[in-house]
Structure formats: C-alpha cells, structure tokens
Length: 98
Image 1: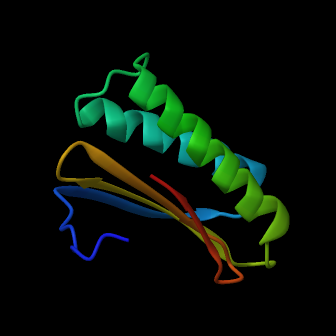
Image 2: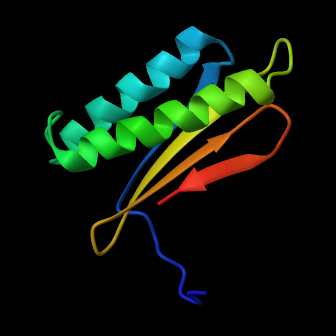
C-alpha cells in the first residue's frame, strides 16, 4: 500500500445518465480527455482507458442502476504518468482501475 497521497495534475469529473447512452458517452469523454492530455485516440493508453471505462460504466448502468439517479465518471491524471479511473454508481459502490 502506498502511504503517499498524489495530487491530481488534471481531473475530469462528470455525472452521466445511468443508461447505455450514458455509458457510451463516458467512453467518448475518456477518449477526448486522454487526447487532450497528450495520448492520441489510437494510442495504447487511450485504447486501454476507453476499454476500462466502457466496462466500469456498463457495470454501473447494469448492476448499480437506481431509477432517476446518475453515475459518475472521474479521471485523474496523477504524477509519474499515472491515470486513475473511477466510476461510481447510484448505489454508492465504486469500481476503479489504474
């Protein structure tokens, strides 16, 4: 376990509808943000991040859906080329990959 707390260099936080359309939008937002952070759309980093977000968002929509409540996507660009991906569903549980 790393006892250090990393301060984000850049961050994206977005609430999205807990629908398949919201899950697709999460993936597209991830691709655009990674592109802006210097990882081209067709790069391995961008592709991997898109796949992780797609899976986490689909899980949030499928298993964590509460009618009328959104899920949240959060991307944090941390020092040392670290990307933290968080998806929180309406039930309050979180899945993350980094």
